[in-house]
Length: 193
Ligand SMILES: CC(C)(COP(=O)(O)OP(=O)(O)OC[C@H]1O[C@@H](n2cnc3c(N)ncnc32)[C@H](O)[C@@H]1OP(=O)(O)O)[C@@H](O)C(=O)NCCC(=O)NCCS
Image (cartoon, rainbow, N blue to C red; front, side, top):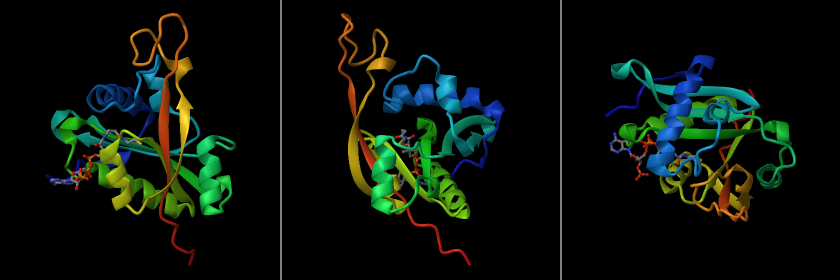
């Protein structure tokens, strides 16, 4: 099967992206917890560009998604990306929220979304970077095939986002839920001509 068609995401897509991320939380443990406001998480901040893959046979429903955002100065991943690439924060761009609905898996849609984001990063003269929880094996293979290289890891404390019933939530308020996150750097942009 060929990849689902990809187009730039619009504001009107955010609810569909939130539904997709809710579905992949249940099917693939991404995101690892359901946030109280999934639409806000889907909308994201510091967005430079985003794309959706849609199913024309299902009313244009969103079945895939990826974002490019500015890297956040000073955060753990950004420090590792900067050190590994020798580049300033504004020369990097983060690939985020790459996700494909399970019924669209293994169609090349994930690879096509990632390549769209990498090409757009390169068109801006910026180096794509990303981080991912260490349980996402299929994503790791995809990143490796697209020329990304693992450079480090850090632990993320999700305590403040957890609600009763979430994995790791402890009723007396003492919560220890840490995510092991792997950092990656993507292919260099081609030299400007
Ligand atoms: C990671 C993810 C985006 C991949 O999406 P996808 O659309 O299935 O990706 P692709 O189809 O491009 O590639 C997936 C596999 O299908 C294979 N494939 C691609 N086209 C195929 C086809 N036409 N026929 C058979 N297999 C195919 C690929 O070679 C790849 O194989 P692998 O699992 O052995 O590595 C998806 O699994 C997902 O949403 N996972 C949960 C969210 C996640 O982990 N996101 C990363 C956040 S950091």
